[in-house]
Length: 230
Image: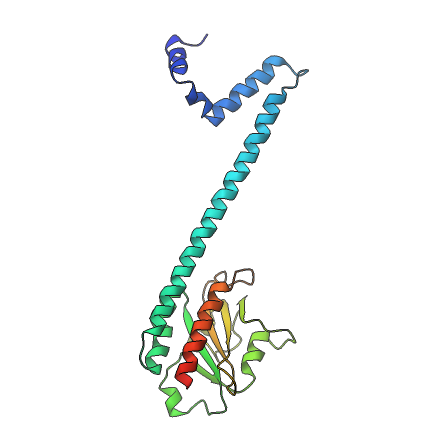
């Protein structure tokens, strides 16, 4: 027999039992045992199926909300980085901001700008621009992005990598494990460029990730570079 005080509390607030999933499962199981093995309670089966479906819907709901917050955070990051990139008034400061505050805002370990040029890479004017700029011979961008394979080049390429040389990353090449490659078009009559973001985390850039925000960032960067080059 149930104790009187417990019975009175249940009768006073019966919704407490209905809201407790574990308690409801126990009651349904007790009902099944009381009816015996020869009787099938269709209501209990239907309730169990509905409960499982509700749990799946709740999991999906939480996943969608988490993805929405992550996309919003990524959008805000890119917007802040673009504003920081537009602040400098000289090309040298522009490149320094890429390696500094822009890289920190985007949470990447390094940013490199690759420019194809017929000009010598050891030109004094280029050396003043620091390690963020890498000058390569014509054809380097397509070769690096494709990895020497005969494939179509996408505007943005994300991949896990272990750099085979320190050409682009310099001294940091030893710990780069993933990278984002954004091809740049500087206009008619100009050689292409490449914006490279490298990260120590091998899962930071993966081929399965979306590239819309990086493509937008590269588009703004590309138009900004056209003004500097003109």
